[in-house]
Every structure is written in structure tokens, then in C-alpha cells.
Image (cartoon, rainbow, N blue to C red; front, side, top):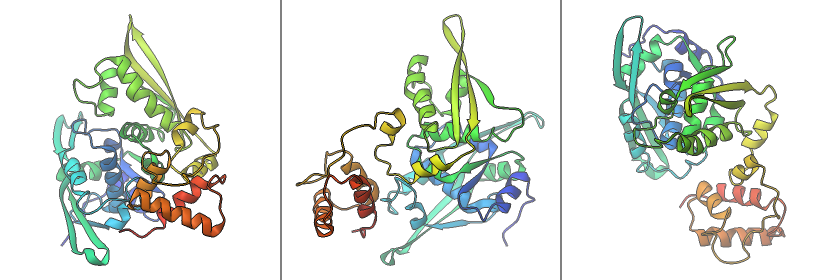
Length: 343
């Protein structure tokens, strides 16, 4: 019989919000990046968020959780996954280290997130691949004892394009429900730990700032999330000693919803304000390989050959009398690709 552990506030909140498919309740300890070693990649982080969302209020229970491969394929940028390609993602999650220091109990616990994952492909021919997993004791104890949580906009996490954006977004989200707190100072070492940066990578602060901090904040500040972050750099002498990150929450989420509904292609230019450019035109002949943004759209939404999808879309446009430089040609191609059967 599955053992149901007594629930703390976090698991109770997750159970109470089981109806809400737009939000994920994540223990603050996980959101704040306690796995500071072997931090998962972007796609593994998105898989982790889906796993925690599927487990919900039962994340601390001694049970095996389940989902379908089709659930994963609904996430932006993960539509092309197969049962073979999800194996490395679970391997990354198995390698992530959770380290918890309890100052009250005066104990430090080192463990992990994932105990075991199984991919059942006995009925793969019918399009049915079952994924199941159990969480490790460390994660379950953390979830069971957790009284602080982050309620994350699930689609915002799924649409972010950098693992550093996800790690910072979930960390700050775990702080936004604290009263009278709208900023946090990090030592450089603490902020590196939030981003899961190993020793030797971006060791110069200038590289750390330019390659990781600034792009992550810029993406979070785009219309993909409800948060707006600002960073202030505090120096001792000539060296930056602390980074203070402050946040505001957007009350009107209409712009967020509009951006999440738009194609992924072009987001960077929209974020940087450089999207005022000539109207796009779909190639009149040939493949979409090495053509922007068409190759990216095709890869993200279907698994057809680059030449085949291009010919099929041109035939579709001809049949509908749609010009290849129509104002909404980018959206039309995105929708067309997404509707094609997988081969």
C-alpha cells in the first residue's frame, strides 16, 4: 500500500491547487536552487517542472507517478522528443545533487531528486508511451517538511529559452510571496550557485555578468513572465562583491498572455526592440534549411524534412491563395507545421 506522509504547507498548497493547470507549486528549497551541483539543462528543468506538477500534492508520498510522452511533447521546444531522447533528460535529473542545510536541526543532507524512471514503450506502435518515476528520499523529505513554496506560471517556465532564466525565475518566484520583501542581495558565489555554474566557468565577473546575468534578466523582463527584475552591482574597491536583484510583479498579465500566444521565432528581437523590419517572405522555392526564421519554426513544430515541409506549405498557400509575403505568414507557417502528422 502506498504510504501517505503527513503533509506540510507546501504539499497542501499543491493539493489544493490541483485544479489549476496554469500553475506549478514548487518547494522553495528546490526553486532556490539547492541542487547547486550538476544543475540540469534547460530541457531537463522543464521536464522536472512537469514531473512536480503531475505529482502535485502527492510529491512527498511513497508512490510511483505517471505521465504520457504526449504530455511532455506539449511543451514548447520539446515536441520532437521520443522515448529514446528523454532518457538523457532523466539521466541529468538523476545526477542533480540536492544539498539541504538545516540550521535548526544542525544537519546537512546530501541527496537527489530522482530515484528511478521507467519508460514503457510496449504500446508505442499505437502512440502510447508511458513514463513513470519515483522521487528520491531527499526530495520527498524536503517536500514533506517544506512550509515555503513558489507558485510558478507554468507556461512562463516552458517558454523561457535559457536554463539560467528558468533558475533565476524560479528562485525569485519563491521570494515574491514574502511580505515586505522586494529585493535580495547575493554574494557573487551565492548567485553563481543559483545559476548552477561549476568552478572554472565564467570565472571573470565581467563574463558572468555579460553572458549569464544580463541575458537571464532580459528574458524574464520580456513579456513572457509577470516579473520585472533590476540588478544593482555593489563593489568593494574595483571588484563587484554583491549583486542586488529587485523585483516588481505585473498586475496586468494581458501582454504576457499575448506574447505566450505568439510564435517563438522573433522573441529575441521583440525583447530587444529590434523587430521593426521588412515583412517576412516565405522562400518561393527550395528548402527552409539555413533560412531564418523558417528552419527554426519547422524544427520546433514538426519532424518533416526541411524540403518536404517547404513544398507542402507552398502548396497549401497556393490552394488558399495566400501570398508568401502575407503579413501573418510566420504565424501561418507555425500553425501549419504544428498540425502535420509525425512521420
